[in-house]
Length: 325
Image (cartoon, rainbow, N blue to C red; front, side):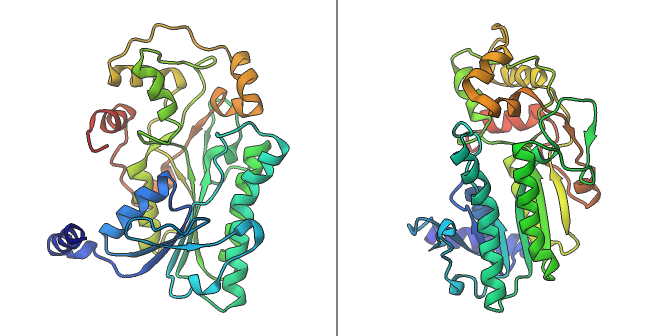
């Protein structure tokens, strides 16, 4: 604790313009993005708390227990909160998409947001901003030359439908007068507990696994950039509506894996895993890795955000070869 206050004092003295007052409540705060974002917000002087199914203390934040699947949320947990970041949601890549699993993936995002909205409205509690996660899956699982932008129509398919309803739940806050931001994230690059880690582990043993045709695009973003965009969405009142949270460099799956192999100093010698094998293992979920298009980052850049990691090689090198990555 002493080291924390010493670090915070140093930050205040060196960067007084970067210290902020305010309270941020995060759903899904114990997840990969939530943990990184929590640390970033604490460094900037925010008071941070989490809504979780588990009340165990998480570092320097207070954890409040809720049960969104049962409609249980104490309104007292929301009082005094300035900003709410909604990251909660079951991982779509954890299990095959059975009927029950589909319902879990959808409800964990949509019903939880609706519960928060209803609790706020029913108790006269007002937020300064509601920032919701979303995903580039809203554009569908397709491989084409098209570069998708925020104004493009939603696609069909399971993940696209989940993302659409996820964002519609966030729009409840917007229609009630709360500044609302929806961030459509791509594959988040982080060393552990991420989609990238599923490629890193076999690559350590010389198995740089390529999947399908290799021509599918793989939109991506470094976790540092993603969380800095969340911070920007909190602090910049001009941020409103939908933004693609994707790095500006477009790469295909083959280009992604060749870059990963180069950074990890491993050869790419194995043939790609055929699509029919991937589908046999993953079912419908296979389309997530077998297909993919380019996603535009123009709107977030025009809003003034400058990416720290704008090339894949730079991002992967930071994550894999940086001891602190």
